[in-house]
Image (cartoon, rainbow, N blue to C red; front, top):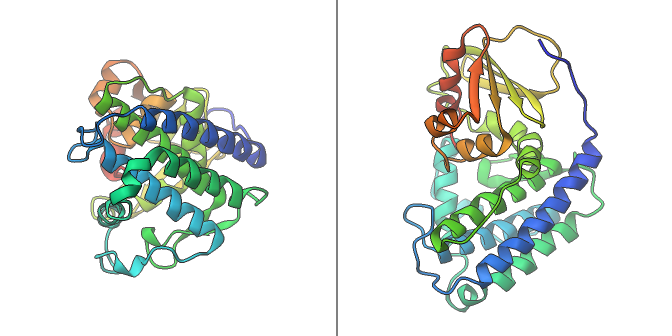
Length: 286
């Protein structure tokens, strides 16, 4: 069953904010050192400039969500109210590319610095549980500020990697930063990202053990999912143990699951270890 641990949400949120500030600083240096914005990035179909523009739009949206400013017309996103999580994310990503164009693309580093700092400034002093509207996830949807801050960190880390892969420059995602994303953001986002069609009739309880990081109970039951941090003892069907950076890259589609397994950075155990392969199929990449 394992030992139940606890964490300090205020302290962890503070560490996440510090990690966001550090990652944005590294991202700006990476962006400013990029000579060709039209070069292909590590994200298929997107140029390095596209990734930077997307991030600039993300930073703007997150900052505006905290302040309540309506800087983006989310009703313009071409999806219906019943759209799936994946369909919404795809549509919003496509919209984001057009929000930063022309002369703004020539100053992406400065724009990222300004908007990233703005998010940290407007959210400073707010409690980790403060609701932050996220209409791009669905009408009336909101997440705690802790999750929004963790998502800011995940966007910066993962897309920084996309830019670095395209420009053949180094980029690191530390185990500490990856653990913060998992504990702060994925606890909230994973239930939203469940493929409800694939999850119909499914009943599986996963014990997700992140090495040096959080331990999550991920329970999929009849088309819905719950993710609980520091859950009390209960029977599990499958235990997944993962290095934090590897789990983050697999979750966001930047590393194939087979590679993480082959490298010994993820493995399954418990009563039904073969069910470990299903988690990545039931919950899509954010």
